[in-house]
Amino acid sequence: MPRRTTQRTRAGRRPRPRRLLLAALPLGFAASAFAAGTSAAGLASLQEAPALSDAASAADRFQEGNRLYQAGDYEGALDAWLGLFEEGLDSADLHYNIGNAYFKLGELGRAILFYERARVELPGDESVRANLELARSLTADQITPLPGFWVPRVVSWAVRLVPRGWLIAIVTVGYLALASALLHQLLAREPRPWTGRVAATATVLTLVFGANLLIREFDIGRAERGVILRTETAVQSAPSDDPSLQLFTIHEGAVVRIDRRSDEWIEIVLEDGKVGWVRAGDLETI
Image 1 (cartoon, helix red, strand yellow):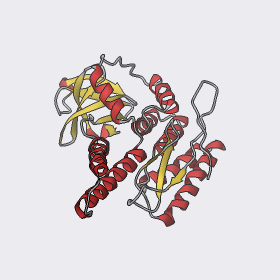
Image 2 (cartoon, helix red, strand yellow):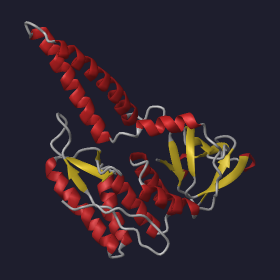
Image 3 (spheres, helix red, strand yellow):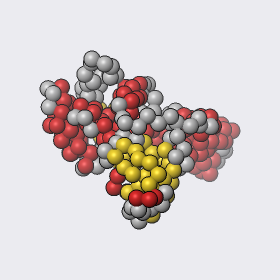
């Protein structure tokens, strides 16, 4: 199994693409998975799992993209990785590598889009953070974010603290332990006192970590965001192309929050608090 290297982008150094890890899912889920890159603790984040027969092919194509990237063929590497992405394979390392390829090709908007997608899965990864900051520093709009309330940041950090693979394992073990303890109490002639303590502990573990997993899987409470992909986009005060309603313009790579949708229009909020409407085709959701 190839070892993945840790990297970060600095002036004068060429970022290296990440390697692919293949790993098995925890009990009761699937035989194999297309695994995302490891977090700082070295644990794989598991995403959608293709069939076992496809996993080796996906790994080969991923590594072919790495080879092309190292050889300076960024378009070839991007084609290889985008092919996997369009087929539904999803991992932080895949997003990160696609972002690197777009960055090398000068497409800042799409580079930022895929770096942001990688950061959703690996919020504490230093390489993702460094590359994203570098790409955003090169955009035309230097937007100063409003100071945010500390509670949402703390909650978001706590929800992402435990890697997804561990969450699945803990919930599975907790569920099995709870079921075993309850069956023992129901079927045993003389239930032992420890079964009650096991059942109570397993219940707490299953509820707490299960709720955490549900919040992460369904993005509960997280604002929908997008990245502007057009070179320049007019922001309107209403969902209309009327030039008299134009408020200001934003440029490729700007990260925005999506508030409302109306047919072909989207109401966005910039990080500095400005609000307006843009064409839906001008951005892509993270």
